[in-house]
Amino acid sequence: MKKKSKIPFNTPQGYFDSFEERLVDKLSTEQTTMPKARGFTVPDNYFDMFNDKLTNKLSKETKVIPLYPYNKIMAIVASIAAIFIIFFGYDWNSTEELSFSALANTDIEAYFENNEFDLTSYEIAEVLPFTDTEFSNMLNSTLENENILDYLNDNTIDFEELNLQDNE
Image 1 (tube, one colour):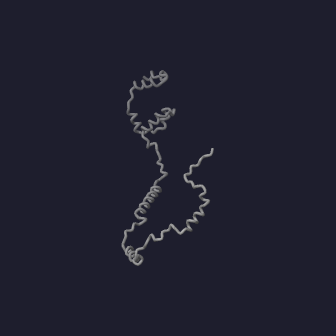
Image 2: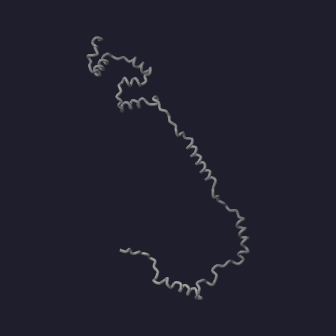
C-alpha cells in the first residue's frame, strides 16, 4: 500500500518546461510593471534647513535614563556580601558536648522504663551518682518493723531462711 501524500501546493503539468520562454517574453515587451512617476518626493529646501533643525533638537536637554542604575547594582552587591558573611560566619562544625548532667531526671527515668537492660538494681546503683542530700533523706526517714517484714515477705523466696525469729 502506497501512502498518499497530502501536499496542498501543486504546480500545473508542464509549468517549468515553458517557464523561461514566458519570462523572456514578459521582460521583452514594452509594458513594464514599474511605475514611471516617482512614489516619494523630498520637500523643497529640506536639506538646506536640515542642519538647523538638527542642532535645535540636539541642544535641548533631554532626560537620560541610565542603562545600569547604581542603586540596583549596590543592592545586588549587598545581597552577595550578605550571603558570603552568612556562609563564612556560620560555624558549620559546632558540636555542643552533651553531658549526663544536661539531661532531665524524667528523661533518664523514661529511658530506663522503656528499654530493658537486664541490669539489677545493685548494678544501676553503682553507676548512678549518690549525693549527700539523698543519703541524709534516707537516714532521716524511719521505717517501721511491720513495713520491713511485709516487704521481705513479698520479695523473698524463702522467708524462713532469714531467721528473723531470733531477732524479734
